[in-house]
Image (cartoon, rainbow, N blue to C red):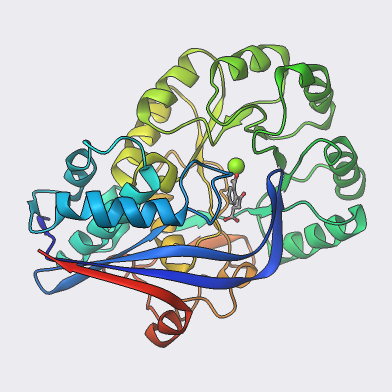
Length: 371
Ligand code: OSB
Ligand code: MG
């Protein structure tokens, strides 16, 4: 259980996406992210920083994360022995914000601890299921027929729910098309903060489509306006961008700003903070699901272990490797069964096998520091 951190290595990695991904803040064709390797006591732990090249989803970028990890977080953790990986996040408390940078280190420490104990990460985290239910997040497309064809493919693959990205001009038309062509499938929409309180009437009109939920309709840092909106619409609001801490989760639930929460460890500062949010939601009867940040197999494996906790009762955005990267950085990649489930890996730590040649080929920059 104790985690000793003797060496920290960073890699900046770039991988092309299998298909473009478009949200209300833009279209991307590849992912650039940081892989963190921590060494101690003869074992190694891996983490993935989900910050992107631009500060559009969150204020962090991979350049800020690299700087914060190298110049501020590495000195706080190197040469130290933590009694438990949950102690890593508080040890980084002098640094304000920068949850994605902190999470990458903290999650690598959990992997390290689980490997040192020779147990799957899910056991250390408190996971209770052997498989998780998988859903997909489908970006904004060039046309409605293109969206219909993507949905057809994903339903045929077995995914348990469909999430489509929406923005002004691609909302009622897209959701209406899906309902008329695919009927009562489990469907939700993610706005990535593309609307304002002025759009209340339009958002209320979406009630007619019986969505499972609408994700983050309003501003990325706003809870109060979501509470006012939730009072005016029947569709449950799920918050993503607005929830950066357990305190935000408490506030959002107490004020009625949401009825569901999307947990992403990168946004929350790692596994320990995610477990806190998970537990608060469980106590308050609020279901959670695990979000995605277009991770490689390394980050995706972490997500699968976390999503094995009991209150992850709705299908999340953790899907098969082949939807994102071919080949992935792990071999074999993450696979989804015909019934839309993913097995929680049973090997030590994150329990997946990194293809180091592929990782080397995708690495564009490196950094290393010892205690
Ligand atoms: O809002 O959930 C989001 C991807 C990047 C940034 C934000 C989001 C997303 C997704 C994709 O919806 C989820 C995935 O398939 O990994
Ligand atoms: Mg989202």
